[in-house]
Image (cartoon, rainbow, N blue to C red; front, side, top):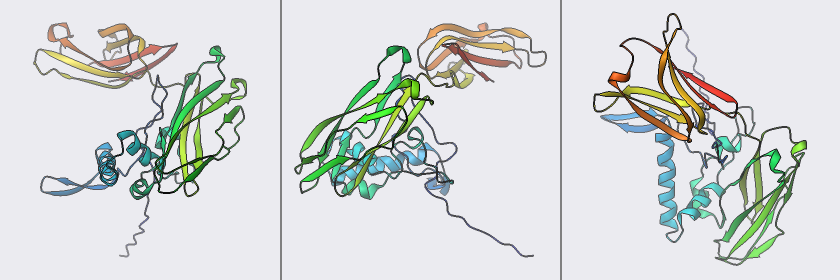
Length: 316
């Protein structure tokens, strides 16, 4: 019998389970950065095992921040974060298409480049928030702090962004900074909503310090994109043994929220486990006393949340 093995090395690809943004309500770019998180050889009781997830990626960033702090003990947390984001590698999928800014943030961390960087741009990304057509506000400005951390005077300049129909940029003229000198600069984006077809616009501005090019991801949201109104329902016995507790995540809050119970065979409505109006965004949790629960048995729970005319449901 002949067996043939073909090994294909894959790197700098986002895992299917990697968390994506943007952040609802504030519409900020998240994640800020990405790091290796698949098939990471990790310690377990009695040995090692390849594991994946945030628990693998987060230590990469924490360790990187510690090494940058060791190399630059006078840097603040904001400067360390900027160094990590400013020097990250922009990554693409298998077809060569770049991941969106709200999928990869600034990109994949490059520790050596972050330690050796001679320029910092703070913050490392730009969020212009959500724009409502009714607001009639077409100009959105933001400020950046540019710092020369090198040993010689540097000249900084912004590259002209790729032309996008309906969006125009106002960028600072080139300027020079002496070693350890910093400067606050303002830039602005002017949008013509009638010319914009997509609800989410993202990309990167590029600043050249004469030696390296620094990418600054941005995100602009026109009207509120559709997103799940309810996520992550969990239901289990409470710690006190006298109740059951549920937890559910409402990304943007809810005008109406409920947990409806049905007979799974006849799909007959049994009642509400809980119901409410005008809930804030975030994690919602509540304990239901045993005496307020329906009789023991199997039920279909439909968890729903409504906001601004849209509804999402979870079956459990």
